[in-house]
Length: 106
Image 1 (spheres, rainbow, N blue to C red):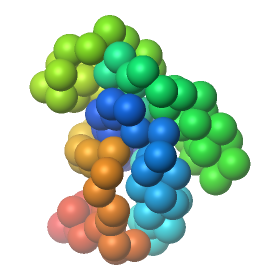
Image 2: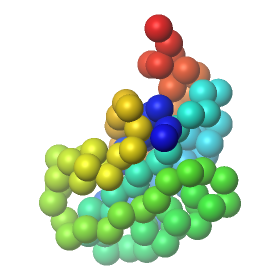
Image 3: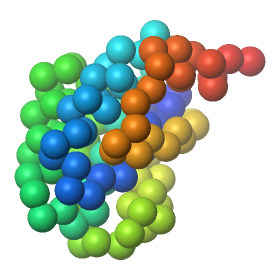
């Protein structure tokens, strides 16, 4: 079981999500999974996320759902999360490489 589940709500994110996932892949802390929730996108967000996770060797999955807005997408991600901790990352945000290391430090 991963310690951290990175929940990424996505909506029409195909043009940006790969950059976001690049910053997740660059994390110095490695005990995590990615749970991306495609919140009813009209573009190919789901397929882009699936390919990007595989290409970067990231553990995780992309879940499709009808549009429930950001809170609904986050709740779906929480329900699917296997981690002890949840960290949210919006599809158009970028993380510094030490983000997860800092939030998991005791």
